[in-house]
Amino acid sequence: MSTPDPQLAADVLRGMRDIPDFPEPGVVFKDFTPVLLDTGLRDRIVADTVQRRRGQVDVVAGIEARGFILGAMIAHALGVGFVPVRKAGKLPAAVHTESYTLEYGTATLEIHQDAVSHQERVLIVDDVLATGGTLAATSELVERCGASVAAIELVLEIEALQGRSRLAGYDLHCLVTA
Image (tube, rainbow, N blue to C red):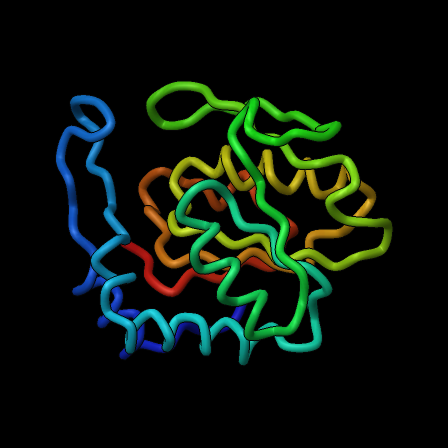
């Protein structure tokens, strides 16, 4: 795990906003969309990841939905392919499926069975690490395809939910821990 850039982390934290009681009462949603509006900040996040991961990955997998945004931009900057990891029922070809628990329920993710090939090194990108269920499910899907998880990149880790514990053994980098 590499050390986060303290100025970038502070700027990201200032750029995010909390939405109380979303998607249900008692949950405080960390809204990443204001960061996306700030093109300079968004570009710094992408550049930070690219600098750390260049030459280490063959494909970027972005998790629906916010992981698509940064993941596609990172893949473009790295000059590698992009794979969407989608909610159930959104992909048209044969898929691998993995269900998991969230802090407020359950969900299912899918990846095309031929999305990545054997021995490819995959960078998984998403916005927030909460309970770790989404990232653990995505890692399982990537590995079921025969590829390896080279690293996981996130913008924010909600430390109190202890999601990192579900991802032991993975190279995991978060810009901000709250």
